[in-house]
Length: 129
Image (cartoon, rainbow, N blue to C red; front, top):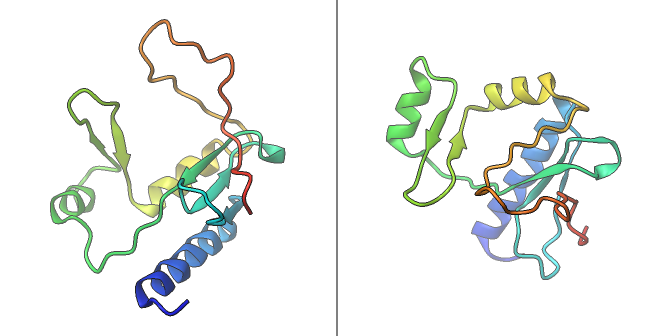
């Protein structure tokens, strides 16, 4: 891997997996074999039947405004784009606290419009490892 940006990204992804595992959260780096999803898989339920996929980005400085909000009294920032579901940004310590609180108990909040079925939905680890 000659590209320095790819090396940096790969290194940071491995660091995030290591931090998650140290915090007692089962996580693994996701392979890139034709996969266009996230970088790290976090297991929420035993056996990998429920989990989260995280996109990991390394930046010299985070977005200044969000960073300032998180340095204040807020534990997380909710970003609500027009006509889209809310997005959450939080410090690492807040994320680990949430994961510890729900370890082994999958939490799913349905943000879809009424009438859309959940019958076939699962959050499974991507097939590429």
